[in-house]
Length: 72
Image (cartoon, rainbow, N blue to C red; front, top):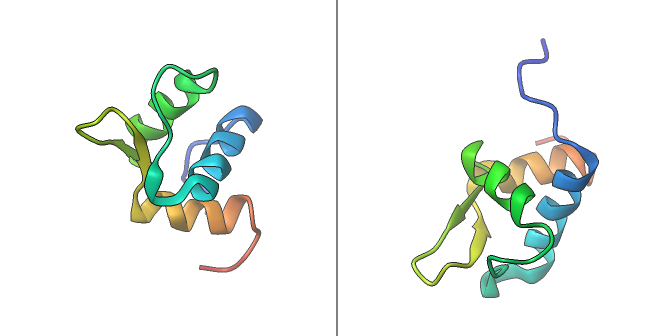
């Protein structure tokens, strides 16, 4: 049964960019800022003390499932 909120295309793209940037994190204030905030609200990303966003374990799993289309 499907019980996860739908991620808009822009938010899936922001999720993918978070995986590409890796440990450096994505800075706040970029064009995808609203999507990063939504990902944070859903527990898929977190904002570090330096203001940059990084993936959570849940975000990594959601990326694998929704973007890479792999079974997790």
